[in-house]
Image (cartoon, rainbow, N blue to C red; front, side):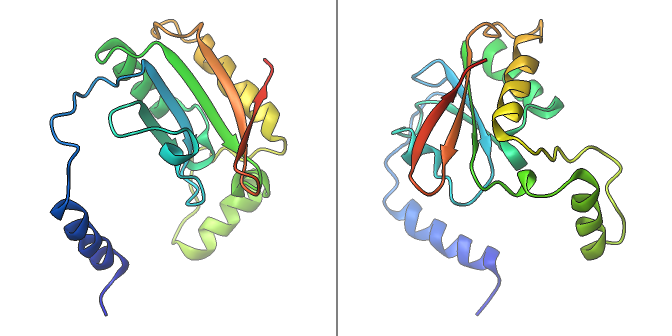
Length: 165
């Protein structure tokens, strides 16, 4: 039977047998980086109509702009030419259903220790989108800090709703 990783390896062998997206540049065709959640229900390329090479996709739990996202955006903008940031959080997010302490306790229950860093729990997805937009706009090392927009993806409808802010 094997592990989940073994299954993914088999899937890659099938994928690479017909691979045609060779020769793409690291700089995306569209000068945009999309920050979104790692949720398995979100196929970012499909949701946004992207082809390989169209945009940089930065994913993490919640799609929250944290220090590592800022690092990735610095590289995306400073070295690879993007100038816009699209933040996409979503409905029914796991980080929106638990408090920071409840999330920390849940992790500690399956690991040997609780994380000693912020996990990013939130209660209102629109407020979380706005906070991430503000973090990008406040970052002086981002060339595209004035070209950031935020959205909430509805996991039940497949649609995006723009968040003012």
